[in-house]
Length: 248
Image (cartoon, rainbow, N blue to C red; front, side, top):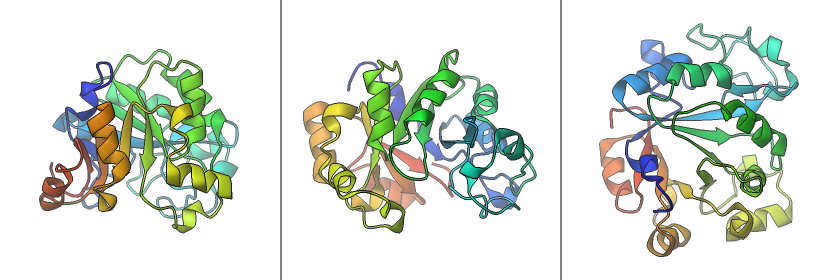
């Protein structure tokens, strides 16, 4: 294991916090963060930028699924987003509010999201928000660009790559041929130099993962695990799970 990053795999990781809509706890909410912390779980959450460059905790590139609003997240300024409620009535949290709610109690894994690839301003904005945070935190992304930027800047947090074995999904249609090749062949590794991997569970075992664990001692988390049975299988090929829908 690289450095002293053992905390990355010490506790199961609650996917977007310990959310449960049936109990009125929505994904990536402060309530989901607090529930995960109370259970002693690590927390994976998603971060993205408002139009005016403020970091919020929110997964989708559109507001439609989780709020009563419609349209692209990135087309709203921070003061607009701060007034929009999730399904449980809680407002979309800023990263600053999320960090304050967790307060270093459990590990945080922040996934950097963007509408397409190459969003390096998000990396800089997240780094600025984390400057005074003292809890365990790691950053990861599907997009190699922000991870490479953070690596080149000497970021002190563990940096990871989120990956899968193919990129045929519609969300990757925006990729250039060069970007697609970079992901598919993992050729960005020289620039990103990941400290850990976060791999889609349905693609395991995977050659890159097996090599990373055996040859580089890289910790591997896998997503999204939705049952104890799936968790048992996942642990044959990964070191930790990102879970939802049950108590790991």
